[in-house]
Length: 144
Picture 1 (cartoon, rainbow, N blue to C red):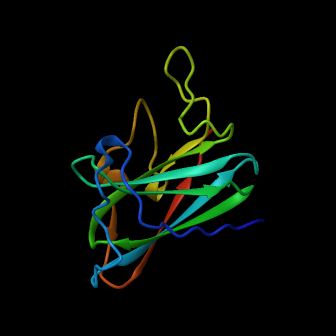
Picture 2 (cartoon, rainbow, N blue to C red):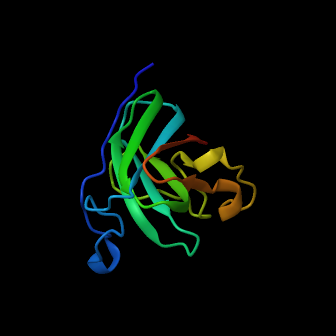
């Protein structure tokens, strides 16, 4: 089983080009580790976004896909409660492909392997508490 690690470097949020809320100067920052389980192929990449309770993206990371498990490390995350949303961008077009009915054509998952029924899981079911100076680990099972 291959395992890949990625470190999130300083970047900007695509919408509005606003800077990320987390910064390397944050002395209270922590690391968020996401174990992405069930990746079916080495094609493309795993794209993850860290979301706060208001639905704002505060960080994102991209890692080459590795069949089995892909591990993503996101550094400099401020303490707080977040959810992680991710998808397997197998064709490398940097977006979640959907069918004509709007259903995902690529694998997707959520922190704490939150169950998906008829839409995205609630924030509470995928919530991860990041603690100062700690490595917080969550698992996200990919559904295809």
